Image 1 (tube, rainbow, N blue to C red):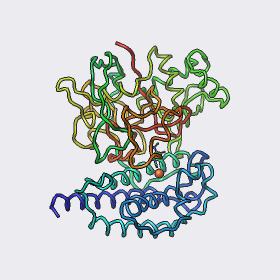
Image 2 (cartoon, rainbow, N blue to C red):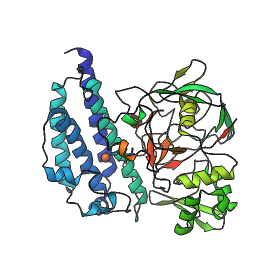
Image 3 (tube, rainbow, N blue to C red):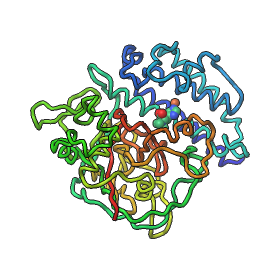
Image 4 (tube, rainbow, N blue to C red):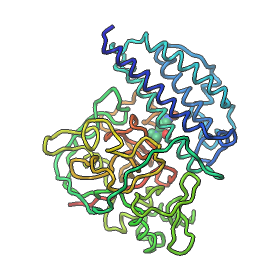
Length: 436
Ligand code: AVJ
Ligand code: FE
């Protein structure tokens, strides 16, 4: 076996162990009750996410890759996301905390055994260059973010993390727009190591010139929209959005409330905090982002515009993996990796600027785009339709860029997330665009 493959296997082993350490760190402070309760009908009980992480690892890194199984059919069904919708998961016969600990450990032992024997240099596209290991790694990271969404919805005494990371302060100057010159760029990727199926294939897209906000829309800016009667003006809203905010009596982002008129507070993982004017707005739906953009005389960027602004270097005619280049994220470049537990103020990461000068495109808050989630021309689902394809052309909107709650291995310029336009549990904000 050639030595680079041994290094790759050691690296994969380290990455898998580190992912598990994080999952357990997040769950550590929680009581039995907090683990098993359903905190919101659109979320699973946290203990389901935990068992599902282990079962997904078994499914892909033992069963599909090597034909091995530890669990029985019944357990596979309990943790199959496509069998039971989130709202019904509390009734499932899930493993309790200690049984789940043991199950995840047993799966991991067998996975590592197989890893040392695996052929990562052959033609099997699942194993080639470690693709399926990175898919499973990103799956655990994605569920970590889902778990944080659940923790943000948890009622009661609030979530006290085991560890927290500090944030740099922002530079609220520079809320103007930056120009992205017209012309063709390469959207998506042909990468088969880290990229997931919906990011492929790479294809050329020609765009007219446009302007995009240098930084995400701040709480200060969004508050002007709220206090200008933005939620009472039908003409600003998409018709279904207007109907929905009337029905649900929505008049501000989720987790916002007023102590006195004009004295706005937010609830952050169960703790009350004054609204931070220079931080990006968080917990808005696509409909709210769309209405704000109309109020501001702008619009949401399309997915292609977002990706071009984040990745395309017109000087060299090349595409960057991250806004700042191809080097991995660091705490100087972006607010990722969960432990800050909140977005930084805008402008806090000058070292993370994209070629056009946009800031904060990776990290802090997911950014809604105008686009519906669909397959790129020539899309082929791999390795399973239920990751992306079953969600195409069904009214989901695309979000880009990841949030403070996203782990670095699960974000890059080409990464695509999606949700319904009414959803507000995501760590999502937005920035606006307009035609040049
Ligand atoms: C890509 C975040 C929309 O959570 O529904 C997790 C990721 N897929 N398990 C989701 C996912 C299977 C997915 N998102
Ligand atoms: Fe999953």
